[in-house]
Length: 295
Image (cartoon, rainbow, N blue to C red; front, side, top):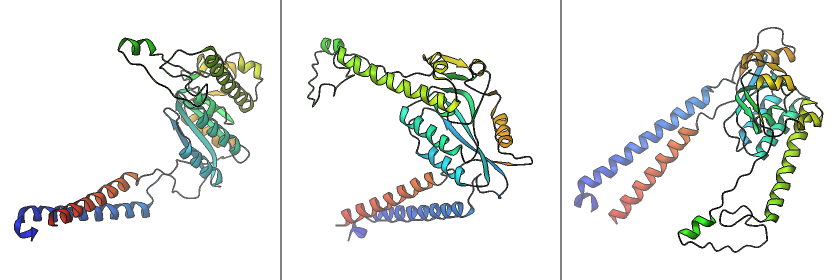
């Protein structure tokens, strides 16, 4: 018997398994309690509400933000939405998706964009989808443009004796590769792509802001602007902070009395889920080791 030949190891395995089981049980109980109590800013009484959604950091995906916008749009107690943008921009696709969802919300309820420290490039793209924009005087915004940058390492590779071998199915499949010089055809392809996205950016701003395309194009050269300059150019509507944007949203929604500021439900149980998964894996691992040693 393994337990007789290795009593201390056997005791350690049993003790570890019991501890892991207790940890898993406590974790699951805490998760159930938190889930049932619904500890979130969004679970409040059915008073008039202003929903605040934050778009922060580099924009790489839009799934959670789209879900939050749709949730607030369907909730009749949320009379208006404030999108707080504090982002230098990011990927084109997610920015366009968020812009589109804000535009779909406007016929249902007002949407006000509030600019934080930075709301540039894709951050401004999103803000342009709102019915009104509030910026701080010193907010960094604008940067209406598209950029793609590439680094060529061909000469460095030659110096260290490396020769890349590329097998491709089409002429442009390795366009932008750092392993070779960019050809004229590559450059033309990328420039046309950049110009197309830039045009989409300008068209979206013109539509969202109800401005002439030529006026947008005159400042859509990638330059950054302060909130104060953006106001002079008509790219934002008011100067103020987040609270000013919330008050304007309430006013636009026709709320004359008190209202609540609510935010989307946070995924508070994600870390508990990971802990639970880790505990289960630990138990399975210990049981497997025990059977392996005992056998």
